Amino acid sequence: MSENSRIATNLRTLLLLEVFANAGKALSAKEVHAHIDLPYQTIHRLLVALEGEGFLMRDANEKKFRATRRLRSIASGLLNMSHVHMARHQILTDVASKTRETVNYVVPQDTGMHYLDRVETDWAFRVQLPRGSNVPFHCTASGKIFMSSLKKSVRTGFVDALRLTRETGNTITEKDHLLEELALTKKRGFALDNEEFMEGMVAIAVPVHDPQNRFVAALATHGPKSRIPLERLLEYREILSKGASQIAKTVF
Image (cartoon, rainbow, N blue to C red; front, side, top):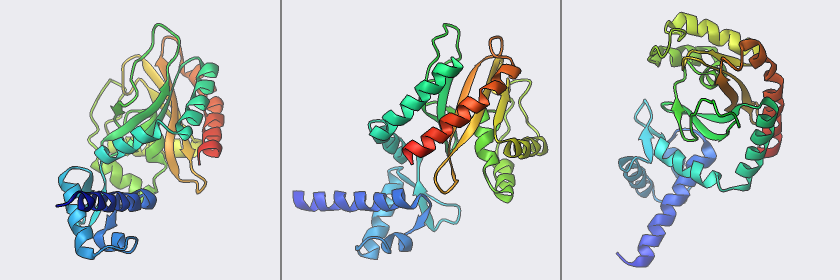
């Protein structure tokens, strides 16, 4: 194969991935074909190759493909170098200066909530969860605010599929109890973690929405309960909500 042929094939792969990025959902080979002027057989072959390398995975019905964590990690790395990242990080810095606690920008992934960006507190005593960490859905403020954003029927199915592992004595491990907590979370517009993920740690999270009012991420702050009783944690809700609104206006 000539060098020109290899470049052409690589370009086709990038164009195919661009379709997935713009769609933001699982796609079949037929749906991809509607967006790219390439033979159907070529598209299917590229999809299977990307699946084999771990960049795409089959949906539950085996007919559609979706981006995997590996592909999203590449996208995250590129995003972190962008002006969008810098603008968002500046807002997180401003929120952190007001709460004087660590502030996190957390996005949902296949296996949990992913710490895409964060600004650390200056306190010597702090809970360290570095950028890039993944945490469970069911026992974190960011996970609960995400699940509360799902439609009720989708939310129920999502919770049914989760393993509600007990992390602390406060972890919610009964599905009906968790669904009640998520309904309350949706009603009040913020989520709490009262030592449910880690002993001695509390957290609060609010949603970040795009212009179509779709959930994009959670904006959260956490710290040791010895320094932040729940009453004070609730005072951070307005600061976080204003930060989430700023991110929505600046980034999207």
